[in-house]
Image (cartoon, rainbow, N blue to C red; front, top):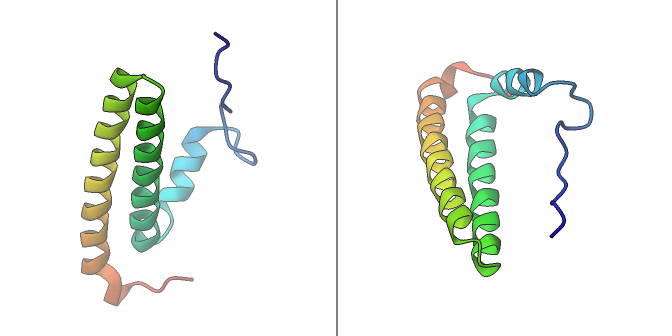
Length: 89
């Protein structure tokens, strides 16, 4: 079976550290939405892997989706705290 190929970095980013820094500099509302979207993508990947019989990987990705959704909820609460004092540009 051939290995699945995935990019190591995103176009325009030479390091994941820079990507993380740029995401962290977004408004907390944007980070909240990003985390929820990432969680949804992990859940989608989990369902596909489960269909393909990759049960162990599917379970791990499902757990990761749960963690991302919890982190997103926390970030949403952080946004609620600072929303009145933050201007999204």
